[in-house]
Image (cartoon, rainbow over all chains, first blue to last red; front, side, top):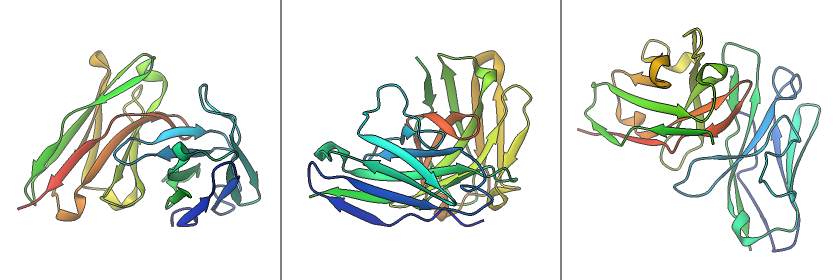
Length: 111
Length: 116
């Protein structure tokens, strides 16, 4: 199984919105509403930002939102702030013998 | 609050084994899978496998079958990940993470360096 496909990098200016895509297949992203998004700052552990496609854990800013269409999930960050600069990873449940799959990661640069 | 605390950094020689621990607190240990995910330097996240702390049943990704063993000790709410026959490309930060269908809380990570 290949990793989920994410763009290697995205960028935006403070205050703008950006969207990161995560493309899988009908066996993972397309078949289950168990897509999560993680933020990782250098040297830190990943932090859950979105779970089950669109739900935010307590304490996560409402500037972060998630959605899904077909085999592609998306993370949107509105009102970009300098502190949002980080790597972002998606993951999906797959229902197979490898039940969890990650995307390759996207580096977000706030210009 | 949910916490996953991992054991400290390790340096191993090629061919050796390493065993990393992950102690859970703040929730019912047997209620969630514990997953192990690794991240090589400058690379992305790689799911290795998971253990059901209630039953001890494990699922490993094919890449690590035969080299990895995940166990748990429910009396101390701790899971372990042992990786055998280490190679230089096993150098990575190893994370444990709680979750059911995917993961939510993560440990702080354990750096394993494989070098002769």
